[in-house]
Length: 347
Image (cartoon, rainbow, N blue to C red):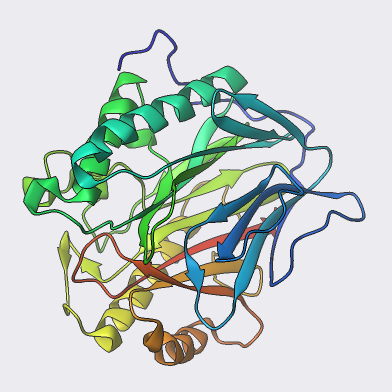
């Protein structure tokens, strides 16, 4: 598990380069146009689109209310594609996306599989050089299967923590993250975004940091930060991890979607406020029409209620929101919300 290559945790921003990133959501296979190239595309749905672009990743999570959704991260500039073992790498001047997809495994084998996949991921990151991880998405089936410490999510958390430790990635510099389960069988998909610019993470004062959870939640704590910001000379990428109804380290309102939704939105607001205090982050962070959100629902029937409460919270109709059917990492949780927002720097 050890590696001679050490992960670079802090990298100075490149001078004279301004990121040109944007995020869109649609129901058709994306096509590059007008200088915009696909850095990373998430396909949600059961169809099998032709692999027209190496940046397009089919995730085994289904949309709620539509057959297919494509969340696309576009870059105004060249995007290069390469491979490192099983890792797909998409690279531009400011960012790199790394994708590793392998057949899933049952809980008893998932620790070993997680170690294998995460070692490939971090070896690819080291091979790129001069970047640090800002975001990781993890998708696999049956996330709550298994009892106690044998639960699949806990086995995943053990493997991730071991690899981060072996590559020298400490708790203070872990990226933002999401780990949810598909409601059907699917591959184990790990999708990462790394940056050549400063990434500064942030925690929610309303919650215990996930990497400091007590032993109650498994032998190794989940290694991700609650939020963070990629700070550049031209634009800022603001990232909020998968956020649920957790206060301190405890889930609240077990099985009650209405009350969990209320607490989840309160946590989102706390994260926006905390991110606004990051030095160099620019103007106050708000989830406006520049934000792209994913809402993971254990029960698809909860969409109308959650949609209404979320739009009240956001204060508008024009939003990039993907509603997805997924199992949350704790079996008592009904929903989880994540966000990404790209804004121009304020001079």
